[in-house]
Amino acid sequence: MEERDKHILRKTSARSRSFILQLSVLLPTLALVSGILAITLWIAAPQTAATQPAVEVSKADDLRPLYAVAEDIAEGKRLADSSCATCHGARGISSMSGVPHLAGQRPAYLYLELKAYQSGARGVSAMNNAVKFLSDDALVKVAAYFASLDPVQGTGTDAAKAGPEKPDPVQAGKTAAAACGGCHGETGTSKTPGMPSLAGLDPNYLVAAMKAYKAGQRKNDMMKSLLASVTDPDMSNIALYYATQKPARAQTATPGDPAAGKSAAAACAGCHGDQGVSGNPATPSLAGQDAQYLAATLRTYKDGSRSDETMKGLAASLDDNAMKNLSAYYATQQPQAPNVRKPLTVAEWVERCDRCHGVNGNSTDPRLPALAGQRADYLTKVLHDYRTGARRSPQMLAMSDVLTEADVDNLAAYYARQHARAFVYVIVPSK
Image (cartoon, rainbow, N blue to C red; front, side):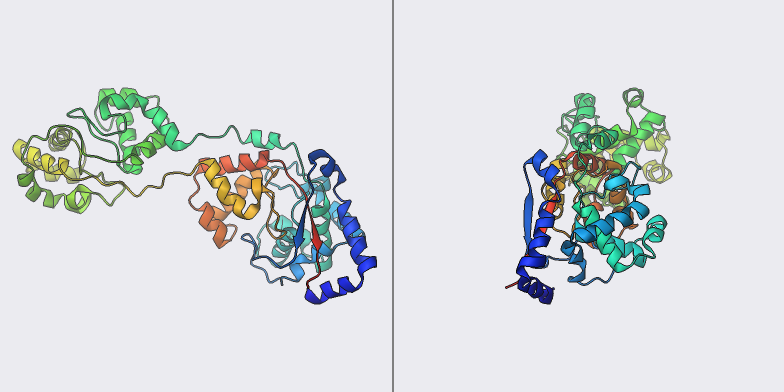
């Protein structure tokens, strides 16, 4: 590209001035509407795009759409009208579910994606077939054409289809758990003898326990009644809320002898962990738990009113005094927080996404896609594709791998609502 830049510098009045003039008049409507026309001076090649497909394209070649002149764009329009409009809509505005808008998208990104489809690095048959026989020059022109268009606005409809923003799951769990605080403590640390603490228990275990009470597999009429109308998503949120609370010992009495219970606890460590801190999400931690609840639970395993063959066998040899001592030992141990990530808020996720994709999804890098104004259903699909590996990018996999379903829906709706802005890239000769 350095030699070409020198060539442009020498041809100052003819091609360079004409090129800049042609680019500057591409987006007058958007400029009038938004009052903003951002001109990015592309002096040095940026780092490889996070979403750049696995296809060999040199950094000189991938910026070729930026050099397009009016004749190139006109030819790109002709090709796009015949090959792309059926799915992506007239002038790159899609009305088809799961198919992205292309109008105003960044030029080098479009070119790289087209090359990826053509090479087979991207495996969507409709796109593979559409670009299979197009020359590289044609791909450059098509990319330049779509990049020259005003980006779609008024996409609130797309965002609305994704539904209202889903609340933070921890906060939603706190709200749903309001009825639980009277027995289990406001933040899940019991102050009532015979009532278990919930703070710091693994969410997988808590969900399984709630479902067992709701189904009647665990016998407790009050719990069954309270959980009758609680949905599975609400159970997950409640469990996440308690899992993210700081665990502490139950603020209740510990009848029994902890020292005598320690020796009996050796048989429990294989499942419940040393000192009662479990490393298995399906097995509850016992450290810091209310002693009377633990003793009562051992009795239910022994008499068969709570079913678990392993626990029944272990409890069968314990008398009432041994159960009290064992429970007292675990009650005096220090509970530990489970390995559970507190979900990020939408604002925190957006801050991370904007680092590459620009403020509010308006990318200033021609190799990275703009997200602002894009169809919400398409953005949802893309994030799922990165999570499952159907679309490959180490950077995007690392970002999307920890997204929850609520995170995906919220991010897609957020970016679909943003005001899309066009950018004109002016090639500046190197010195």
